[in-house]
Length: 349
Image (cartoon, rainbow, N blue to C red; front, top):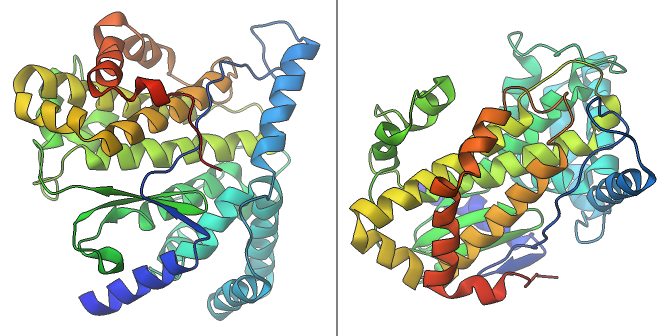
């Protein structure tokens, strides 16, 4: 079964157009949504910025799916669903392809790995309800449902895969859009549940991701980076589909900021309590570079939705925590100690 899984993983990444040892597109943008904000004045400049972000997210360049691969994808869906449900799911996938081709690419290239298990869980689970989004007539096109689909299939395409691609080294792969980022990693750092004790008044989100328990043994902060990546894709999905969002509120920004806070707390504890782990991180230029890029991207998109009341439920206290000097300075220390700050404007094309 392990060999079969490796074959599927190899097949997945063999069709991904670009594969970089280190890859992420970087951008730094502190901008605001405009049309729907209740707390700020509408301005032509902010509208143009917002429109440019949505244009960026809907640009299919770099996310080519061959007609054969797309046909196979829809054939697999037809093997699972029929009738009205099939029509709704196909319609939802076409919307995803049009508004957020990166997300569509992620789903198409990873769904076969788990035999469309996330499709079945999300679209067939009666406990997943539409969150009162206006202008949505069926559950399958609900932005929060598609957000979950993209988020989980980002995880499916990422993970710790020893000897992937017949490489002699071991490491962690992050699925980022249409390519994979491979980070060589030959040691296990301190376990991430250790930072749970550093959180003042932890909430359910913290408990879910960090509290000690079954399945969390041996999991270090590579998993936190995986979550930051997946929650960034969630934010992108919601922005791409914002025209379908009504007046209801959700915690898109909150979840992304929470994962950013966990990353900060891990790095702080590494520096203060695990100096050997800190040295490993800052001396691993590839890993430090990826952390910087993931942080830049996460920060960019949480800022975009900062003042959109529909997407920032309960997020402000977490934002204050993330950007307080006591916490944020660890990111600056990482950039300086590792020396990768000189590459902060580098992007991959």
